[in-house]
Image 1 (cartoon, rainbow, N blue to C red):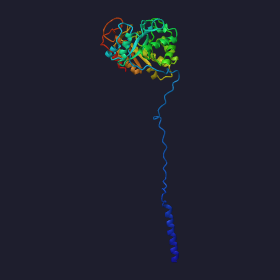
Image 2 (image 1 turned 90 degrees about the vertical axis):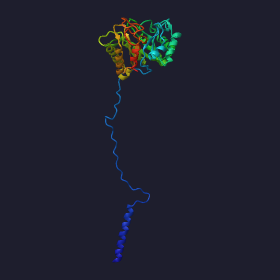
Image 3 (image 1 turned 180 degrees about the vertical axis):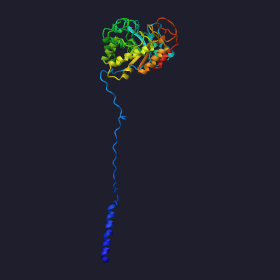
Image 4 (image 1 turned 90 degrees about the horizontal axis):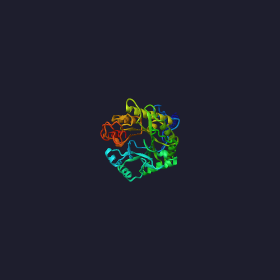
Length: 359
C-alpha cells in the first residue's frame, strides 16, 4: 500500500512539473501578446475638405507678360518746355511715369509728338535722369491729337517695327497704346491687334491698351471694345486702362468714374467668361484727369481719393493720371483745361500723393 501511494504521489509531482514547463516560456522566446485592433482613421468631414476651385467654361483672358507698375501718371514730352524727369521724380516722389506721346513723323517713323526724334539728346538726358533715380518708364503711342503711327504704318509688320524702335529708344519693354477716337479719328483695329501680337511674341513686350469710356452706364466705347476683343482673339495679354475722364455725367463725379470702370469691367468679364473675375479686375486700370477736364467735369482731390479707394476695393491693378505737370495750384479757377496746371486750388503734388496711396 505505501509503494502504491508513493507511485501515485510521484505521478502527481511529475504531472505538475510537466504543466509548469508548458506555461513558462523557454529562454529567448517572447511571450505572446494579444494584439489590439487599431481603429481606422475616419475621413475628414465635409467642413474639413477644401472645395475644388470651380472650372469656368468659355474664353479665358490670354496668358502672357503683363504690366506690373501700379501707379504711373503721364508726363507730356511734346509740349515745351521739356520736363526734367529726374527733378520731377525727386520733387514729387513719383519715379514711375508714362511718356507721352509717340506719333508718326515721316511716313511710319516714330517720333515724339510727330516732330522730335526718338533719340533726341535732350529727351535722352531727361530720361536718364529718371532711370538714375530708379524710375521706370512706359512709352505711350497715340493721344488726343496728331497723326497716329497706327494709321500711317501700312501693315502690322511695319507697325510692330515702329513700336519696337520706340521701346528701344527709351529702354523699356512696356508699351501703352492710347486710342482716342472722340474727335472722329478712325483706327485700323485689326492692324493694331496683329502688330501687338508680333510685338509680344517676338519681344515679350508688356502692353497696355488705354481706351475711352462712353459714360457711367455703358463703360467702354464701341471702338474700345472692338480693339480689346481683337487683341484678345490673337492671344495677346494686356492691361485695359480706362480713361475715366471727359464724358458726360450727373451727380457725384467720383461715383460716375467708378461706375464707368465697373461697367467696363463687366464687359471684360463677358469677353473672358473662363477667367476668374478677380483675374479680370487685376487687368484693369483707371486713369483720371487732374482738376479741370476738357468737359464740364472737374476732378477734385476728394474725387481722386475716392477713385483710389474704389479701385483698391474692386481689385484693379493700376491707377494713373493726366498729367504730372498739371499737379499744382498754379491756375485756380480757370474755365478751360491747361497743360501745366490743374485749374483748381491745391498744393503741389497733392494728386500724386493721393494716387500713391494705391501702391
